[in-house]
Image (cartoon, rainbow, N blue to C red; front, top):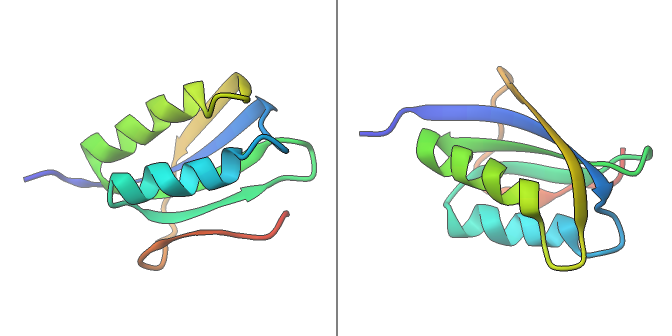
Length: 94
């Protein structure tokens, strides 16, 4: 049985205006993860993923590549302690 993990990621690069946020929603749905994703005013994308440890590690790896038009320069991930609601959603810019 897989343990649950909760991780926050911050993705920098050309990640806004290229469908990155909606791509993250699709990736999270494929991996049955809970959490959210949003744009940040500094041009980055932030997401929180909750789910099976292997699935969370997989989505973080996927975030390092991103969708076709994205150019990811940096992904910072940290363990998160605040629980998230079930499901995965795109939130407004923060």
